[in-house]
Image 1 (tube, helix red, strand yellow):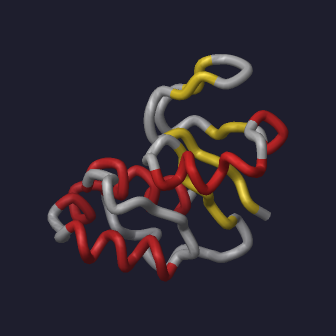
Image 2: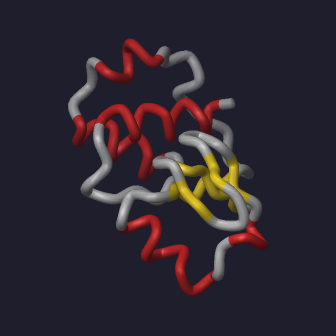
Length: 97
């Protein structure tokens, strides 16, 4: 099952804060890939378990951006090249919960 996480403050039916889950019925399906590419939302696959649950935020922030992108890809997360290390870290930690 996919869920959407706000990577930036996002306005849909209401204002969603960073890292807040956005209900699937709020976002038009034809806009999902565009919002991901722009770094507004992330799509998180909830069926897989994270192998990186023990990585703390501090440990993740010490990694290179390329490493974080690879970790997110292995976890089945959709990312954008424009995402910062902080956004990638928040996304990975959100998936691990």
